[in-house]
Length: 24
Image (tube, rainbow, N blue to C red; front, side):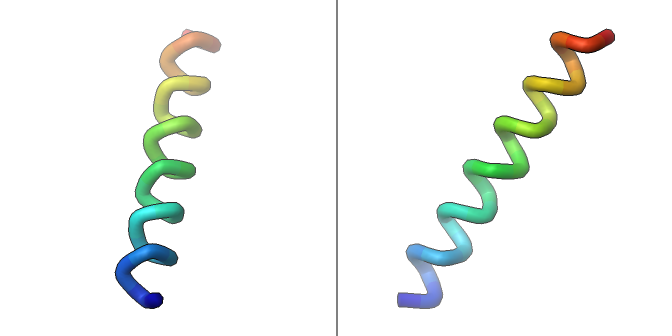
Protein backbone atom coordinates (compact mmCIF):
# COMPACT_ATOMS: atom_id res chain seq x y z
CA UNK A 1 0.00 0.00 0.00
CA UNK A 2 2.80 2.40 0.89
CA UNK A 3 4.51 1.74 -2.43
CA UNK A 4 1.38 2.77 -4.32
CA UNK A 5 1.05 5.95 -2.26
CA UNK A 6 4.68 6.84 -2.95
CA UNK A 7 4.16 6.15 -6.66
CA UNK A 8 1.14 8.49 -6.71
CA UNK A 9 3.13 11.20 -4.92
CA UNK A 10 5.95 10.85 -7.46
CA UNK A 11 3.47 11.19 -10.33
CA UNK A 12 2.03 14.33 -8.76
CA UNK A 13 5.54 15.80 -8.36
CA UNK A 14 6.33 15.08 -12.02
CA UNK A 15 3.09 16.77 -13.09
CA UNK A 16 3.98 19.84 -11.02
CA UNK A 17 7.44 19.97 -12.59
CA UNK A 18 5.88 19.79 -16.06
CA UNK A 19 3.46 22.57 -15.13
CA UNK A 20 6.35 24.74 -13.95
CA UNK A 21 8.22 24.11 -17.19
CA UNK A 22 5.12 25.11 -19.16
CA UNK A 23 4.88 28.35 -17.18
CA UNK A 24 8.53 29.12 -17.91
